[in-house]
Image (cartoon, rainbow over the protein chains, first blue to last red):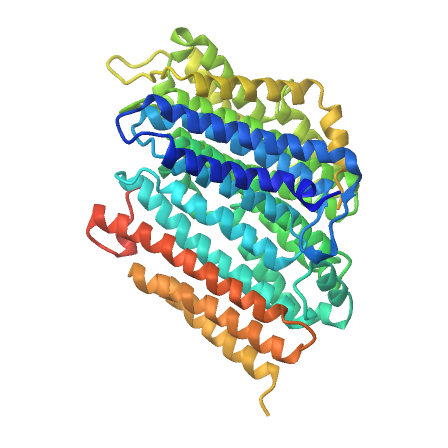
Length: 493
Length: 101
């Protein structure tokens, strides 16, 4: 198979970015012409969905597509990478679709938004396919630099800029740690290839202090990107400040790519080494998992701002996924499949939740507090029903994607003998029901205070389409999960 | 005789200075410089290690990529700092407290 075809999911994302950039410069007329601007959102969405479709199209060509020698083994088009490329393309396309309605409504419709989303997706997919730590890092930076810009997209807003500033500073700080970890692994292995590092770490070098330091640095760097506690400080501010479609993008695409990198680094490079045995990264990751679930859920209860609540909830979800990473470490193929299925489910349900929040935000009347949603179910039953579905899915109740996602991760963790973690995770899910369902109760059973602001939905076909797609996928994954689960089981490296 | 260990100790020392600078200083420009210091410590480690692993040039190539990425990062970072300065007329990190409840 030609190299162009093998890398087509990645190339389609880059091409989407380039086309969106050219259309913005050549076709669109300046400022006044607001109607043409929806085009860019549609181009980007179609392009990113197409790259997801290309990734699924390559699925049939075997567990791993052979690449020519000239690429030197720095990327692998395996089913693991393709699954993530499809998830990333789906998430990126949906957030571009939300942006199509959101940016116009809030008067920040500028063309650079869409190329940045597409390039960021390309970086994320590169990260998921990388089998060389240098390429992984280049992918991470391609993804992150675009998201730093997107987080500060509302240049006139203090919150947006402060969120972008904190995200940028802590993100670059974490990237430096990740890099130092890569450099130390190079010192040990004389290579940046993950396979060769794994070989070197299986020898005597695997228990040297340099290897320990490298592991800690890598976990710090990737822990920031998945926003695991104790590296979560930037998350609430960046999520609250960023425009809602960007928050949706950050919470799913960036997180999925970081988890892909984490899985490859921990399970391939450190798998079967002294540091991947009974004493090593599994203990650290278990600590991250428990801390992320507990802190995320307990703090989310007190949040009055919906975006901040979803930010803490995304920290908690990172904790649940880390339980799956540990199950995968125990060698169960179901463990890794559970992680992939969870990230796909989280992509559709979380983007759906943010799409609803964006939908309920007219210009200068954005619904930010839970109380703004009081009684909206009576005036806007369809949108309220969608938001309620996503909240139920995030809680992990049937018949939604969230239920099976949690079920598979927890069951594979029990099979791997990690039941203390599962007990913590189930207790945390019960806690999370309080704040997710609180929003549902507010929408359906509370009446707005007299004179209090009530959420006003905007009229946007783009956002409505995104909500419908997400809702259908959430229900599909919650009722007929078997096909995607078997794909996740096939997704090896 | 200067060994790889010497280079690594120096690299860790520079990286630590950068880390402390990032944590302690409140001026955004100094914080950006601290990040650059960290990245250059990484470059030093990579290039020195390549000297002792002469079979390939992977370390030096990685250092080149890091230099390019650091430039891109500085461009984005300074753009965010300039936007922040326009709104707040300050480059101090402790002034970015709008969302602290």
